[in-house]
Image 1 (cartoon, one colour):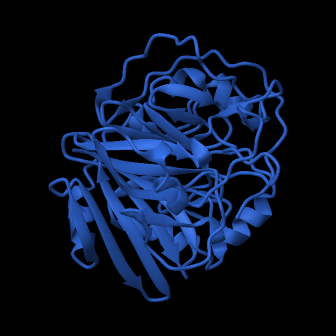
Image 2 (tube, helix red, strand yellow; image 1 turned 45 degrees about the vertical axis):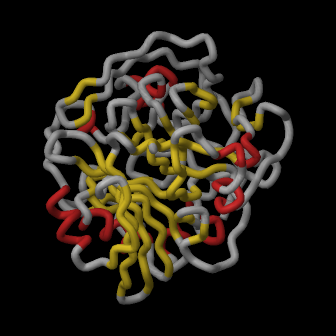
Amino acid sequence: MYRHSSSNRLPFLVMIVVIVAAGAIFFLRDNRADRGFISRWSGNASALQSGGFTGDMSLVGNFQLVSGLEALETYNQQSTLQESVADGKLRFFHRSLPNGSLAYFVVQLRDPIHIEVINADGATPGSDAQGDTIWTDGQQHLATVQEMVNAPYAQREGMSLIGAMAFGFHGDIRTSNEGSVVINGTIHRVNPWRSTLCITEAGYAAIGLFDEKQLGQCQQAIGGGPVILWQNKIVRTDIHEETPDFLPFNPINEDFQELEWRKMIYDGSYPKTAIGVGSNPDGSSYLVMAVSYGIKGVDLAQQLKAMGCTVALGGDDDTSTQATWRGRPIRSNQVREVPDAIAIYVRN
């Protein structure tokens, strides 16, 4: 499902933040000549005044993450393993739930795994002079994930593309991702007011609102939203104050149009997409890339928390929800074309 992108109104950001994941420090990279235009989206001014970073604070060194690996493996024992690749560093599971089902990839961010954002038709996302999302060739590009992963532009020398999942939101006219996009260390688009998954070259992952300087630390990044699990607390639409276990919807003040519509999708049993981030004992990260059918958003967040994830980001949903394994859809259902996908490669 998709909706139109917002207007853009904030000045250029120039703040520097060093992201730390579970005690590991990511040093700032050199400035690049091909940095993307930063979108001027109206958003949370207080976040700028406090340094611009409103991501999972446990990834900024203020808290020590507890490894979620034991919880993950306990959860996996009750799921059905479909296939394990690369000595277990990439695994595909299926799990039946009381009101639906869950399919998920467990991805360890270490060699020989390579994560990469791929785009429909091999096109390049960017921003226009007003900071709104565009494809840099001025055309419209959309494709199903199955079409993307089987196209020549998605193949990488010395690697096998194993799994992939749709993620980014788009509009009906501007069909490129509304959020931030970084591919192989190159910043293509920056939207600091929409939550983003950032994966570093060293194998750490963070979710938050990132400006251009922060995205410079990402090897891959893709925008999505809403956040459904934040600092180990599940997001709910029926509360207005934080509790020991729950947070109100939109906990980090993302800049959404049609917020009530997003709540409706979250509370419904529509197909859903989400990525959770968990920590290994050595401080590196693992991802849980999940698609659900027949369950509510709060139930999906609960499943990801049960897998040891402390933060999770939703992606596009409904008929946009789709994933593939070895080039074939993991579920036979009608899907719409989407702008991009998160692809999982294994180095040969």
